[in-house]
Length: 356
Ligand code: NAD
Image 1 (spheres, protein in one colour):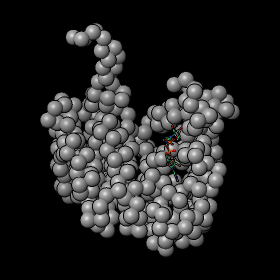
Image 2 (cartoon, helix red, strand yellow; image 1 turned 135 degrees about the vertical axis):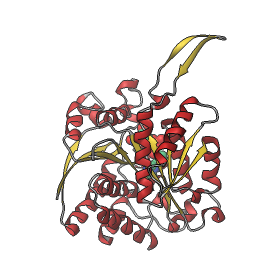
Image 3 (cartoon, helix red, strand yellow; image 1 turned 180 degrees about the vertical axis):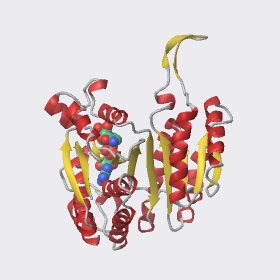
Image 4 (cartoon, protein in one colour; image 1 turned 180 degrees about the horizontal axis):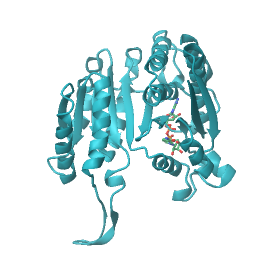
């Protein structure tokens, strides 16, 4: 099969890590008989420099015409003084909305080989954990009615959390389907003891749960979930939650793996086309020095194969290659934990390519 992939390298380490993922995809293509065609487009600071816009029209059109999108990261000190709507990061919201991406999948996996990188104690971490957060991405308080008004104590500002049954059902289905492909456990996180929108969220999820009898379903309040993630992360398989709760909990979940350079993400909508990117930023402090960890982007490419192209064996091959290289003791500087000598972005990529 032939697949057209739009490449958004972006700024800082974006180019280095996306090129690493491209080498890995090319190797997968060779081994499994697929052709991946890559077309680069500008986004973020480099797009501002070239066109005056963080998200040029040509980039949006190119992504819409592609089978899927691989993004590095955007931003850096050079563009920090740009006005709000001209900042590189604004392009991220723009491209998500142009592609209709309402689901964010963020796996948080602690590899046994990287146990010492986690801030959690050994007895909590055991032989590692592996959970997936499914976050609603285009609704809730970040997109609700907002403004300023006169209140009881004078001027006040407000933001509104609103969710429709349709929005809850569509994210719920993604979560149940993800659970079916994993260990078949789903925990829905809300604040139904206080918020009306959470009560609708919970009753809608309960209704959906009837359609997935094989999935062991549970509910949890968000304050308890924040605590449980650090007390016993192994209890979770898939978590589904709203935009704001997901924003906060997914950062907490990534932190307990101890390694920002390892975590991939996928943003999905109704079509097979998705946008795949590492969760970290453009790391301007190490850009151009061959120090970046390419694994988060390489694992994002594996998610693309699995979720957009249905190529599970190929995705497994990438994930196994990453496991193997880590088990052999190779580390980039962000994950050495001071125990061994670091290798660079290029060598890490080469080793993963050779392990496929
Ligand atoms: P960052 O994630 O870029 O970096 C935080 C720290 O982690 C830095 O010390 C960096 O060197 C390190 N780091 C990050 N990724 C790494 C990797 N792959 N390998 C090794 N080390 C890595 O966050 P920041 O410093 O707060 O932000 C830098 C720029 O990135 C800002 O302009 C910010 O707005 C932007 N940003 C972009 C995205 C995105 O494009 N999705 C996300 C977050 C931040």
